[in-house]
Every structure is written in structure tokens, then in C-alpha cells.
Length: 121
Image (cartoon, rainbow, N blue to C red; front, side, top):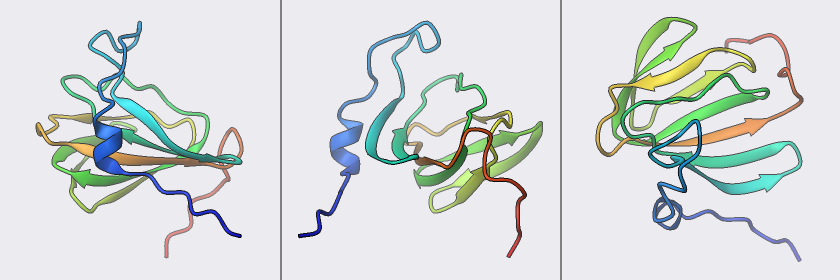
């Protein structure tokens, strides 16, 4: 029998914000949804300032709702509902000017340091 792993956005959002931490004094704005091998899926809903630092794995953001400006290695772009953003492991990035309803899925995968070169299709 095959088990289907499922994550429910409303159920995950009900857990946010999580407890405060040194990095996120207003409460951690992310919660784990699914983990399997090197892959993990989270929901990220920052309010105010996005305080994240570079990650050790490659990652995708899939904007579920709202809009923000996205900074990646000092370049800015708009991020809106339905957009997908790729960030190679180790790159500096964060969201700015998030709307009150801004929520994004985050998918991390692969080895520490990332998988390598970006191929545009």
C-alpha cells in the first residue's frame, strides 16, 4: 500500500507564529509540513521583517498568497501569488514589503552546498 503524504495550508497556518527565538523575537514564521530524505517542505509567513539567512540546501519558494518584493543577491524582483522563486544554496535572500496575507511554501532538497549549476529551460 502506498501512503500519500499531504499537508494542509490552513492547518499549518493555524500553528503560526510559533514560539519566539533569538532570530525571530516576534515568533518563528515557519512550520514544517513534510520531510522525506533530503527534501523538506515548510510554510513561511513572515510578518514585519524577514530575518532569514542563507540556507545550506537549494530551495524553491512557491507563493501561495499575497505579494512581496524579493531580494536575491542584492537584486530585487516582485513575488506574487503563483510565482516560483529558486535560490541556490548559500545565496543571500529575503522578502521585503510583504502584504498582510503573504504566505509561501518553501521546498528544500539535495546535498549541503546545493546541486550545482543553474540550467535555464
